[in-house]
Length: 525
Image (cartoon, rainbow, N blue to C red):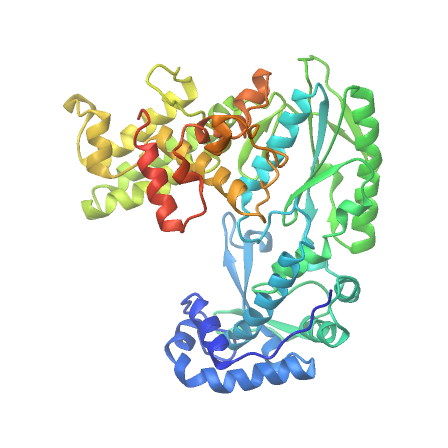
């Protein structure tokens, strides 16, 4: 098993240019991606020759390593450097070369399954939602088996900026990347320079010899490769990551054993970061303890000489997870979902008189519905019949969404327009519909896509082959405890087992989306 960068065709270049976003910003070459797309037919052939010369020689063009840094103000005092985000503008042509190399390298690592299953960042079929779903699935399964779970949530400082080039090149070699191709990646990362531009002012050029270049298409994958051996440093802990957002978790039926294992692998984690440059900040590390029984006691763990106290909840990739694996904190907590949704409905109300009414539905979907939809496969139950109970959180979120739909429909509560009519007139989905669509979609990927992070959600088992349910493609319901039954994947499996068999089969995305919508339309609003 080995990898070697391959020369490309003019068609490959044209495809790479077509996939670039039409951005108007440009590097020091003055050519924006928007302009490059417009002149694609003219530049594809000469770019092909330059790219193939780079691949053949193992040298990345030096003029494409020059980055223009634009500081963009985020918030707060404009005189403080910490309140600015640096935006890196690279030559557009370099993005084309990176794109074709990225395609080849990604295919090699994904086909041979060289990246860890627990890494969800920057990978097709993976997302922040799949990352949290995988964590919750594992922790609920542990609870079902009568085991406590301890979780450390790590803060890695400037992880992308601390990659050591030679260490990365050694790891590429270990994965089977041939020496000549490793030389290309070394050339890509070394001897880069950048200049900061503020208005018409331009700083002196500064060379960077460590880290992955910001704004580069290759940087995310190179980072994933760089940290891909992290799990090998662990003794007992499971690792779940979205790029540099990382958690380590251990489980045991003995609370003391959980603490011991967690502290031992915390030291292993710190050894990994010390050996590979990323800086782990123990002072910003979170600690969740998911017990099988309620306790008024609070545990603590020692991490690198720092005592980390247990907290009741922690925000993980935008979803608030608590130590009971219940979701009221996510919906009702300070600065949590419901508060954010209500603020967005207020914003929608304020702009409703200043934009054409025809666009209000799109705005409402973008700022309100999207907020509710995110993570709904994890936190939000689905009512499959009118007799199913409506939780307080579900009801309160729907009330907020109803206000948004009335703004879009230009009506008031006293007009007594029914929810079905609001849904029909605005084209917006209810909370129940969004949650059902999200659950079916993520479970469909787990069943039908071998590379899905949730592909082993049933440990490879369907229902017994002799049963009628198995012939329909039903999945096993395993949980017996309340925690297991309310948490992913159990609610999604119950919903899946109600769908028609044709929906469960591999299909084009457009067909799948239509079939899911048709099924969800049969559920209560």
